Image (cartoon, rainbow, N blue to C red; front, side, top):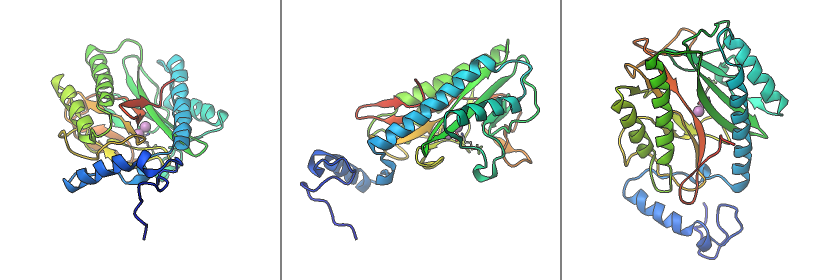
Length: 290
Ligand code: MF3
Ligand code: CO
Ligand code: CO
């Protein structure tokens, strides 16, 4: 049994401040929202300053690795080579690639080409002029996870492919703009889906963003489709990813026999961008950027 905190007790968050000067007001607001039926975050999802520093450092390493790839990813490169570059850069920085052996995943990164939505496994496949490829990198640095991904266009790509990549990036940006205290995951979801739909594209439903930082995948699930005013309430120092997967055709996906690779059912193109973000006192901080 935990004693209910009094105004003058030290706050539960470990700041060393009195409860009344720290999280008391927020807790009262959240209790009210809970009474009205909102899903509110458990305290364990609110990171400490120390944890945020660690997640920021890890996410920035992820960003630097994705930067490094910008110069190298081009026609003629095998996805397995990309995987080894990511692996080496991660280990060299004193970190570990989170995907490797995660639930049996065999490689250090995901490389998802053209109709592959996500979780493409690096192999002998050679990138071709006109391909679009998502590379998804997650570092574990000092025990903290930083997760981000980008699209890379190989040489000249079709107008449709370029448009899809751009719109997916706008979806991420617009989704991030919805992140502020007391907004909800549904506000992110709705904004992203509407933007994709307005260009005739769809958003994937089976996969989404996720809490991240102390583990690879934490609560909440952050959908990229659905209604406003739904899902978990956002509060300062929650950390999660937004990672819209946008399809040129149907939103539906199918998993290949390798039990990882997710592809579009209609073989239409798919594009994805991902950042790790933190809710601040009045908005958002993108952790996976320099
Ligand atoms: N990085 C992916 C994400 O954004 C997860 C990859 S899981 C793996 O959530 F096992 F495929 F690596
Ligand atoms: Co992620
Ligand atoms: Co990722």
